[in-house]
Length: 265
Image (tube, rainbow, N blue to C red):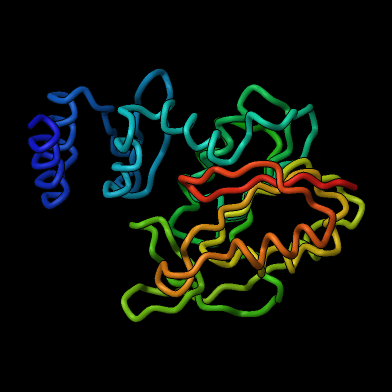
């Protein structure tokens, strides 16, 4: 009954696009509070942690399975196996599909070097604020990673969190220049972790990274059903590529369909 009432309050708040009603419903049901910033983005405060988001409709990801920012982030860290990797100072972490920079929260007490690749221009302001609050040495790159470098059309689906180059006839789009990791990093760079959430284009990202494969220690990759409107996953093709290139399959997260690989070289 309480969940039903909360969902009613939440739905009405979103229809009204009202922070006042949203926070009123959150207060009644012990949920995190929202603050509007610069008329463009929002800040969620909860459990001594805060995160900036771009859209009121994305708040639900911090209400699913939990009532706060910290627990949601901890869950995400587990999905990408961050606790299974020993990170040291000056380690390089490459975050492909950085979204709002959520992974940067894991490294807030560590001296790592963080590269955030996020193609959506809509997310850039919040991504910059979140990463800057956690990491000193970082770079944000507003381009999609692929196996070719050319102009591609990016379909903006940030309300649902799955912006990609897969065409649809409903989303707004923008033209962007794609990038290969092979051309971004020097061949001698040592990368501790390459995390990939490319909305079904994980194989293309990896094919664009073949020349630096030997220098990547861990790959954590989301291989869920994203291609062809959520009907096709990329596990078989990605698993074949990685195992043929001396990466050992370490463990899965079967709920999120994320997988961890370690370089045997």
